[in-house]
Image (cartoon, rainbow, N blue to C red; front, side, top):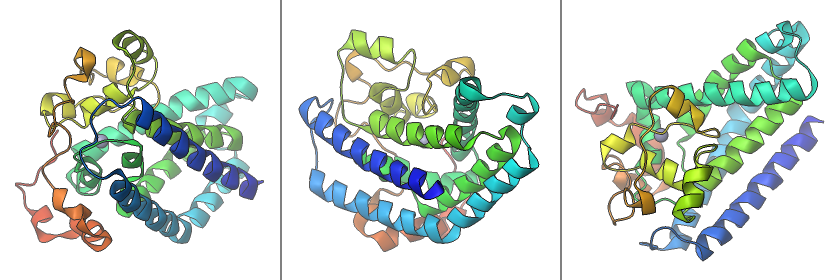
Length: 275
Ligand SMILES: [Zn+2]
């Protein structure tokens, strides 16, 4: 069962990557500033590294933990007696909110920001940016996820759907795909759209300290962290308006990328998180 769900997750992930790569080629928001294949190659390299790191260090402990929580019947969702579609829908909403808090913490807590900033050092944004995470951030996120499992106790199906949705939504909102203003405005009232999330990656910190949601855009509205991108994507369209200056040199090699959070200058107090 687990193996099948895992394979399904991988296939959906690859499928999503291909679909959004094709879609952003046809309906691009921003002009392509640098070689797309080079970006794809570097970010795919990171994805392979991250997959192996997680497989070796986090996969089995996380699986055992999930089974333990289920056997013990821990978690609010079980105490509330939720099941079927109600449990799945409630789990997706609750887990998405946990993810919102976690993302915000990544910007707020200096130690977490050290790992997350590599993601924001990307000076462009396309579907491959959704692969751009430091293995340290992903390992830390498994500690966070283990606590979500304990607090909420989602079913196996709900957890699977949540992970699939997170990866598809991340591919979608990082992509360089654009919609007409009206569609974008309407869609971003419900889910995180490319313009909504590009504002989170903007150099202009008025925008960069906002829009932390992953699936539902409601969290930023409810928690007062929403910044409305200008119509036409003007917030993020001029060249040089995306990505933080820090860590921009790290994309030169995989080694530099992995070492960056551990460099001495990161221990410097001047190197503060942007929020
Ligand atoms: Zn972020």
